[in-house]
Image (cartoon, rainbow, N blue to C red):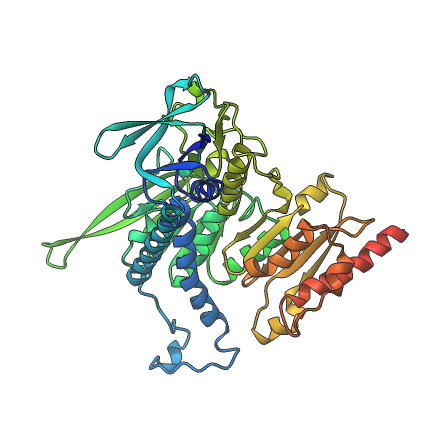
Length: 498
């Protein structure tokens, strides 16, 4: 009888469910142990919900920033002296109900696809068993079920894909009402009047921009010199300028130390009935205090690796609790693989999915190509969006990559002029001798769509000449990519001649 490889996957996010689909297609016996619902945080509390919220904010921003320039007339009864008043508003309760509905529907679709493929899904919390490898080289996985029972599974290989949860500061404990993590904002029924966002990384910047567009008065508290310290400096500068122009209070070099909820009592005119008014106070390291109606904490994440028996099983973790893996997703323990945010490799759903697939290809003896992070495309869903792929300006400045760059502002693009787009650019990097495209940055509306052509160029080692010679539609924003390639060809020749 032919042996069937038994795979147990702990965690049903992109790293887990994509791995399950691949393993089932390759003939393995697959069990997914999941606690919250397939799709993981990416579908239930992170990517899908946040980008659904941002989609509403994007419509608001587009309308507010360009309807007058584009000649759109909105009929209302706002008095002439108050014409600057907001023309459109948002029902946040309705938006959030839609967010949750779409997230649950997406999770349901994933569950159906996985079960149709023959995968068994167990609801519970998984951990590695204490016995280590069995006599046949298998691993034990213990599943703590919702009814309090524990089920033991044997597996030829185990994939850990447990994701992360929001980091909380000791003196800024979320309460789900006024002090919030990014997983709790979808329970709000009313738009925060004054929102303080602590943290200016991708999550903080995305939510700050979204709530600003929805109508909140936003203060963004950043402990660094600028927003998005991990992104292209030129791109971050554009976004911060846009934030400030739209009325956001961006506070750089300002570290939040404590956040507390304060209830103020005010007596009525007759001195009897008292009203309660909630607000939050954020105290900075320099002693300044910022007040608002709500505070969103976006100060990083913690991997879900504690209490899983990983180190006891020989799985090494780094100082942050992230699982150490190689380029084919192997951990330091035989038969144990890991994928996704819990590895800290590149915290993107696309990378998690690729890590999970690679792990299954490796386990099951299929052709496998090790993970190459220099071909990963990523996107910050602010307005404008920031999309990147390949080597970066930081790589060039520190000498990791010898490259020539060209940055082409979008304001000269004819389609951008037609649509009233003033902010953004296309930036390309290429090798000075060969002209091979090694990286790129796009800052524009829907940059996540425009980066694909540059991603193809990077992945296939195309030259700037090849990118420049491909037809683009006129007029189109993608025409700026071809134009940047043409200018980069000239720059490359100038550098070579000199």
